[in-house]
Image 1 (tube, rainbow, N blue to C red):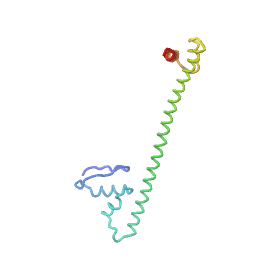
Image 2 (cartoon, one colour):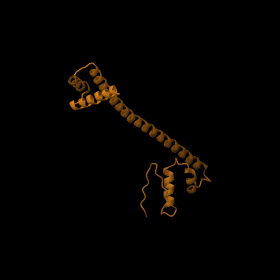
Image 3 (tube, helix red, strand yellow):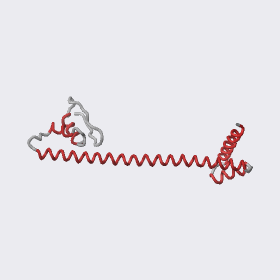
Image 4 (spheres, one colour):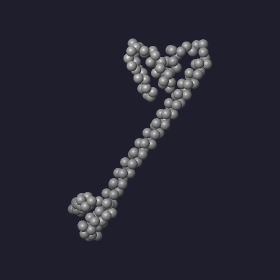
Length: 155
């Protein structure tokens, strides 16, 4: 006999009639997934409801309860995933906006100091102090924004 692992979740047994234990595994799969649309038709192949209306009603009730649970779990999972994705996106967008605003603040400070004829070294010290930049990074921004300013003026 082949070892079969039956797992609760969204995985469904999809064996073939020729497989050993097919009928049993199909029945167990149906019982484990009572929220599936074909639940009653599949169970009816294994259980005779003709003389027992009470049993039929009970099976329908259990199927309905499981359907409600399944839908609830799906809604809850969707809500959790939506919240998680929203939090991640918010974090990414906040980081990008913070970076862009910082870059623009640096640009404004450099261009303002340039217009006010404040010496380069003083501007670099101010950038390091207010934006917590290394000397190399402050120089990088200074060169970048002053060269862009020169390009705009020469055009």
